[in-house]
Image (cartoon, rainbow, N blue to C red):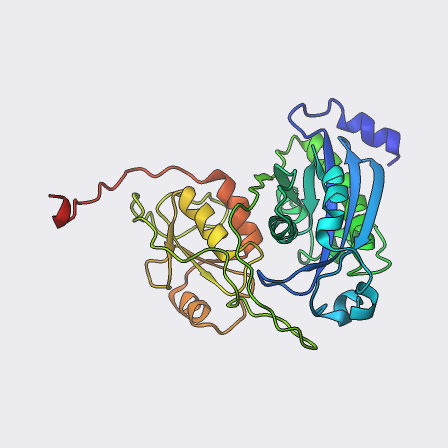
Length: 335
């Protein structure tokens, strides 16, 4: 199919679609909340997914670079690279007024938001689009949700996997036909709101070779007791149906979005965040369903549905209202 054919079959273009996109990829020192960006790339696309320009930079993380065997960026390579505050304005220029597009966008956005928070700057991003969620909306016959599978589906050749610039290029080339397919089919794009961080606490890191922090290190904000969920538990989550207010949701393992921020979003949507798994748990959210954590083991023994984080965040945008509201009983002290 030619470029002209694509444009003809896509017309008329959905008026509700964004006017521009910033396809982003970042490489990092790890996956935890106190990890840092070591390189970033942005491909700017117009409303129909055509490439306008691209940009790439190394970033000095001021610490051990982490999994060098993945991104290939050693301490020597990064030593003379700019710090994030020194490239924040350039990045902002390329993100402003556009929807941030990434493969597992929750992760890329969370890493970018953290860096902006450290630099005391607000990221100019209002919405993001995850290409994993879009592939699910389009029901693409992919064997898994890896970038290489999406690229292969559209005949896009990867040259340097885990190099931010090439990964961003590959994603930009795969996003364009996905966008055209969505426009032809009248598919609503899975856009999610991006909320800049306003509270952030760094944690000391001791650099060392092969350092990979665990999800338990560091904290974004002090732990606090959450108010009781005002909705009754409607039962377990059912595949292909929306989440419903009152569902009990438990989380296990590392999450791309900071755990407390993810829990906040769940609470705001009317879900009950549970600290453990029981027979009453509606679903378990984990990025490693094959792990042997106590929560995943219990969930499997109880037959509790298990969802990946990307699928859960996608469902969070359209939670069904509860049928009834539970009125909490007044405490003895308030009588």
